[in-house]
Image 1: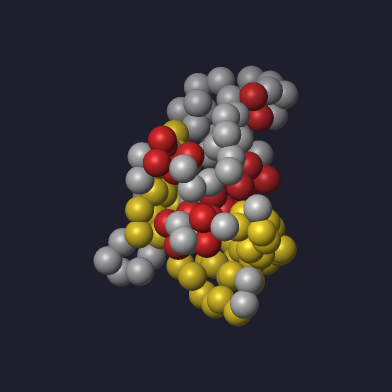
Image 2: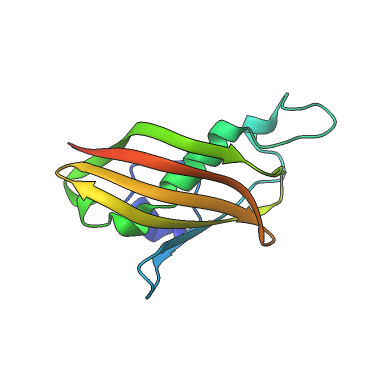
Length: 138
């Protein structure tokens, strides 16, 4: 999916739309990319002289990066966070970096979905988390 196609699925809009492309692989994994802008609002003051993407934004990129698993769900629902577990930050992400997300759907029960997601830059894993989402009517 292109960014415009993603807008037809996700309810997010700029500046909080944090996915540029997304697809479901033949391996059943969801893939997504996002290029951090050169001067993102979320790096202002984090940190002066060495801007770094905050961990909470990395979690949001990973959550939005699961979108390819949920195209049908988004037709009538939105997905809201219900939990973040096993979150680990392993490397820094900076303005201009290309983030690559890989997410697997671990479990679905009723309107609850659990995904494992990781975010890498240039092949180095920078963040990972188990993300629990709940589908709620629009």
